[in-house]
Amino acid sequence: MKTAKITAWYIILILAAIAVSLISPHVPQTRQLSGLPPTWQVHFSPRGGATSAIKAALDRAEQSVLVQAYSFTSAPIAEALVRAHKRGVNVQVILDRSQRTQKYTISDMLILAGIPVLFDASHTIAHNKVIIIDSVVVITGSFNFTKAAEERNAENLLIVNDSRLATLYTDNWHHHQRHSITYLERGRPIHNYR
Image 1: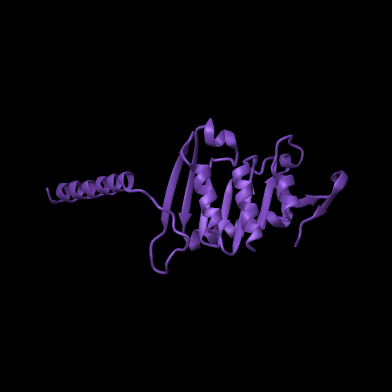
Image 2: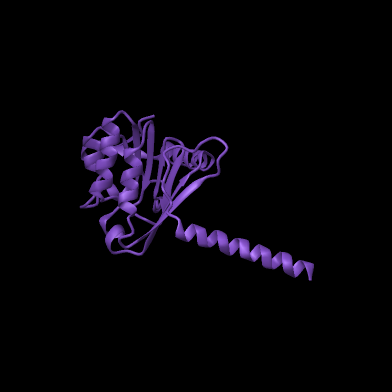
């Protein structure tokens, strides 16, 4: 009897927490304050505001932005990266190797803006979709950085403010940086900017 009451109370608490999370808006923060639990927000496409959320987070970047992308054709996201770079934020990008030969890719725009762009050619597909901002914010999910992902596809995007999680993603980003390459004119490969 006592166990049934505890179980019922536990279920009520879980349902209340779920209800609060569904009702209350999740406003992203630029910094996680020491001692506070991680904060998060989620977006679902089509037309779930994922591109706008990414742009807003990038526009708040102050120190660093590390990007890993499989397909990257979103001009609004690329423009936000260029703005961050022009503000003095250290922006670095790793793309799937297919992006150096795709007809529609954003890599040329980023390279022309002076942003280091590498291509991960060590994997069949470099399928990561990750942005790490200021060693605190992690943006990830199935959401490719494309117009189709925002307007037509069924996708998800998760933005988490958690320095511990950001450290894990940053370490993985640097792991891929070490085996990624850049391409000079005529497609001659050289190793990355390290």
